[in-house]
Length: 373
Image 1 (cartoon, rainbow, N blue to C red):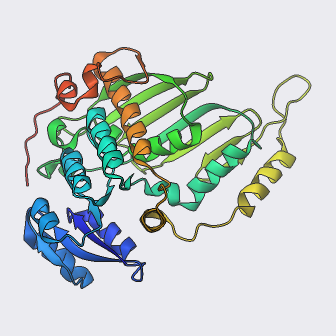
Image 2 (image 1 turned 90 degrees about the horizontal axis):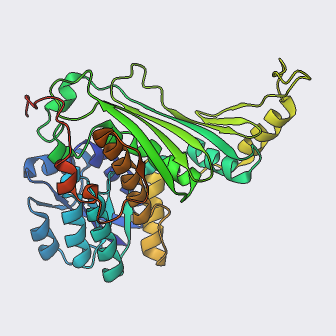
């Protein structure tokens, strides 16, 4: 039985509690921690948990040596501090996205994981959804051919009062706008599908709809991989309809999330035939449909995987290195948009954008943060 604590009891913590409760024979929540204990108490009552309440995570670690896993659901600017302290106390850690607000913090977390011989995983729950997992499997199979062009649509919509929460809309607390806090899901999937190739980035940032936020509410980036593939990533909180997805244009066919397949067949004049390549579309769909369903999806699927890693002494499917890779690409998008220049990865420790302090020295405050709650 794995004893665990959840630090931060806001909206996202609900999904984590629900996921852990799916495995009552494998884990139990023994502590909740929040700066405002009444919020932790409300979560405790909502799910009828038998657990202690703490207002300070360090006190919690001292008072409960039986805690084996710390689940961090706080605002991003304290992820690294809490994760490192927990690992130094010998606890395994799962941290909500984004892993941290800088590459320097990510690397400090990775060092603590290695030194303390614990498990550190970053939430990327969309990898554990059947359409995403199956798209990855189809892409890896090669049935559609080599990937040549990718279009990532991280389209979200948030009203103006979304940034009224005290820590949102501030560079030094939230770490960034939708590029960091929304598109990270799609960027992780992009990294997962495309692999560890070197790339370069050109990007633009804007705030066009949220005048109570310092941050961007829209970014557009073009990526060029060293194998010649181009990708376009749009990160937004102003798109009505919230139509999200990833489109992979491959040599033989297009495969996309939400699931879609198109395959052209050339006429003698080189233009596409009206019917397209029906046989290939059929083969790809049959491959997709034959893939087994995941036993659990979303947060539940990832929590199951993390529990397996702790129980069996293995690596989780989403490692801390994966969390860092997402932050590195996001950092490159911000650097390109802020400096108006082409940025090449990897970003090394001598780069000003490697640290959060260096990043903050370069940010553009699009508006003044006005409303707080």
